[in-house]
Amino acid sequence: MMKTVQEWLRELDTERLIEEYICRDPVQYDRDESNFGRTVGEIRDCHIALVRDLIERLRTVLVKKPKKGYQGVLFVYRIIRDMIEEPAFGFAHIDELLEKGDEADNYAYEFCEQAEIAGFLVADTPLTIQYIYELMADVMYEASFFGFEQEDLAGEWEAIRTAEKEIEDGTAELRPWDELKAEMEEEQGYPFDEESEDELELHRKIIGAVMDYSTHSMKKELTAVLELIKEETGK
Image (cartoon, rainbow, N blue to C red):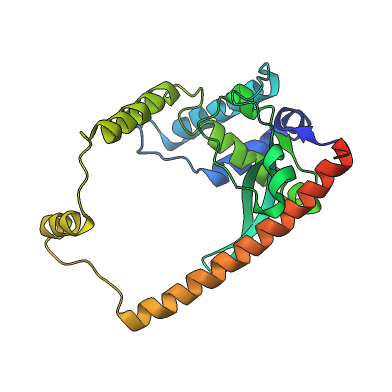
């Protein structure tokens, strides 16, 4: 049976989880004014303590069922970044997988509550298990995207609702790219560096090949996840 995020975090080594998290999201020493006047060691120790608390919270929080009623599953696939193959981390809805197969969407989930994230299933495909620490570090990053205790999450939801309302009632300020570009060029005092058409053509081919690779890998892994789900559910 597939384990949940919470079950995996309870089994994995805390110190390695912390190392993987910091590798995923290095300490930004000048990001917070409260760091000014503190030593590098003090800032790092404080950050590690916050990560440790996050791990413990996800290990012990009472898991909530997803608000929209779906069950999510996390998995690993491959992408190419900076011309190097590396793991990427996906999140799919099981109902969609059963319905759409490898055409199921890959969702973001940083707006989910930590209590929901702790209950996400983790596919036990070979690739996912191989990168389980990296995957859990990414899960922890997403779970703390709006603060280690998600203290900024409510404010972000309110900002989204306000933006949606402004778009609906026509009060949102929408500006064309050419206007914004001209304004930024004036501010920086020199024009944007833009590729020529021949460079753009080659660039598009590179991007297309990279996207084809990632899409192929994701569909391959989604198919493997689907097979696991069918085995476990008998569907």
